[in-house]
Amino acid sequence: MKLGVYVDVQNVYYTCLQSYKRHFDYNKFWRAVTADCTVVQAHAYAIDRGDEKQRQFQNILRAIGFKVQLKPYIQRRDGSTKGDWDVGIAVDIMEHARDLDRIVLVSGDGDFSILMNRVKKLFQCETQVYGVPALTSDELKETVDKFMLIGQDLLIR
Image (tube, rainbow, N blue to C red; front, side):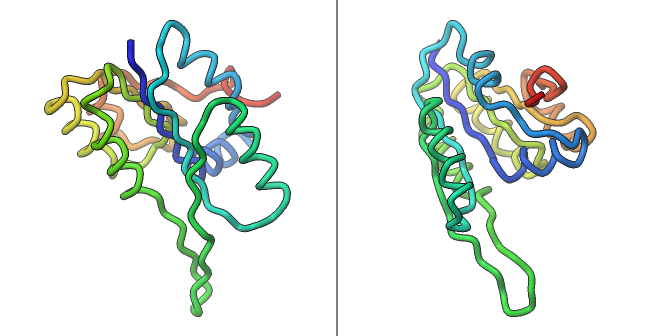
């Protein structure tokens, strides 16, 4: 089974924190999702604020096996912030899907339902989403072949 893994780091960080007041365990996730698979692509999409703690976290992701994709943190004059990877994730998935048997997306963002539906139809890939149940779009859950719950077993104790 040729596998592609795509993690929306900001989404999983905030949804786990909001729902469980705990952090996602990337090591446990990696072991669960890659068992009996050949990892062809593994990307973790994050925002770079330039601090040391974040660099350490990014190095942990790299050591696990992820290619870490970074965008700069942008704060606008009005105080709002920008740091969205949706288009980058979509482009990478579309670019790699023809070489994969299974695509795993870690995000609850409903905007990805169109993407996952399209890759299923165009490339006959199995699609899976890992998300926090209460904060994952129902449309996304219904679009993919398999919705995988981020629950207590995938959180840092």
